[in-house]
Image 1: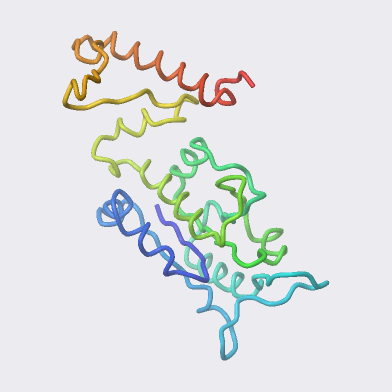
Image 2: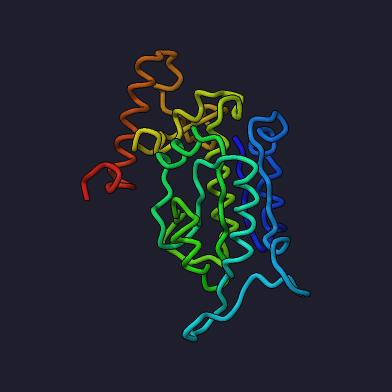
Length: 226
């Protein structure tokens, strides 16, 4: 899989995409992640990527030209399955979305900034808009990192235990059950006896029941009780 991230602040993506699972996936050639600096596609002495909004109003707007040039160059080199714009009014990013994106080959993510991007980019260049939550961030770099991390960890071979991803929260619209490790007793707090029984069938039954109960209590919207 290849992911190209278009940004005006590439430095913000250095750390989250160069450690842990994403780093290993890149080193093992499971994922190519390229950070594209939009200023490289801007014109003028100062390589400006933003300008005032037509009609007035507060805040600057990302210009269409640098984004178009960057996407045009990339599309001449390969076909892209999705061109994503990170936006607070996009569709909510979910595990199902991550699962779908992980099956694709080439993705572009456009990081929004300032007051937003020229609407013509959204109308004519992007194929999907994604929001990571009902709040506003300073830019689209953190959402791009979130999307990338959630997708890359699903790639075959990215996790040392591939079954681990299948038991993550939200994979089956349930939250994950509680987990414990050694010691079995600490400060008089004990691990549930069932987890020490060695009875795999009963343990899996208990875990499912815990997932259902947790979801009903903490996320009734997922359980369909809202």
